[in-house]
Amino acid sequence: MKKNTNITSGMIWITGFSASGKTTVSRKVYHELSTLGLRVIHLDGDDLRSIFGNQWGFERDSRIELAHTYVKLCSHLVSQNFVVILSAVAMFDTIKSWASDNISNITQVYLDVPIEQRVGRDKKTKNIYKSNLLSDDYYDIPKSADLIINNHDRVTPTTASREIVNFFLKRNDSPSDNGRTKYWDKYYSNTGTSIESPFATFVHGKIPNKQTILEIGCGNGRDSQFFSKNGHRVIAIDRSASAIKQCKVHYSKLDIEFTQGLVSDIPHLNKYEINVAYSRFVIHAMPLEEEVDLLNRVYQILEKKGMFFIECRSINDNMFQDGDVLSPTERISGHYRRFIILDELIERLKNVGFKVVFQVEEKGLAVYKDEDPMVIRVIAEK
Image (cartoon, rainbow, N blue to C red):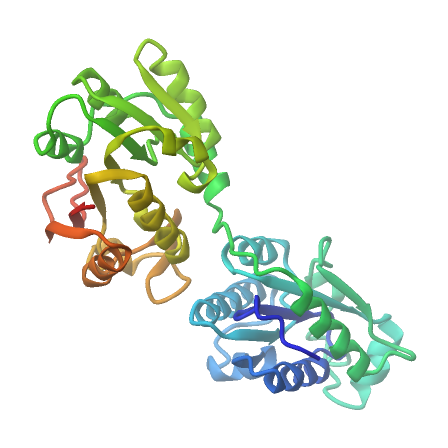
């Protein structure tokens, strides 16, 4: 079996009711993937419960909370380029939804075994069914498992593991959306207009009149309309269809070109002579690989001596301590954020070819109501 070079990390969640063979099959999957040179970790539900000090009970709510802890740990490891195999029941629709939204390249495998065979197997091992610690009614049978294996009769652990490995390796690496599309489409469908941000006034004071500005992540369009009213030509893009729809309604009388998508989705941007790229509170709302692609594309699009203005949340912001941990820099608190390390951002900009002419990291720059986040501001020149 050859390694699919597209797969460097991901999660294989092998689930099924107690005594369905999860641990045995997972051990074989671990062995096969390890022999291919992948960095593999196997986490077993029973082991994890013990490692965490058996602090969760066995009622449904406690099981859901423990399952959430399992998948958050898996997310953290996947983000550091491991393939994580989780052998655990943890079959709850809310947990599957969270994992699908937030873990890249995830495969859920459901081992389907009739109750009679599970009880027979269990009598020889844990005797958990006799203890009444488990009932099928506790769990939600997966409605959309990526792979279902009838793990009984003539199916051996070896054949099951090979089917799982083949399925996993044949999949294209699929980065997670982190729930961003759903969140921002809903958010912008219920928001109106507002005044420009402090960052927009800061940038306006740094650029000459009548520039062509590309705003990346225009949101409700408040900064786009500010630049337009001050004599600049504005091309504004956002990944949220709802945001762009609302902007076209609210600012229909202004000469602003609103387009839905990422910079990489809009090839006609090359036809403009773009002097300024503007990104406020956007870079921290995208995974690292998306940011790296953005920096490269902005560099290609900008005219010589063009300026790239960036404002984003710092890893030293208080909000970094909140929410679910996805990785060393990523959190889910209401919605997805990746908090930025200034020195690393500067290095990425320089690697692309930019010259960094201004940088600051402090509070007081983006005050909104009772919020005063620690933010980064950077000006880079092509």
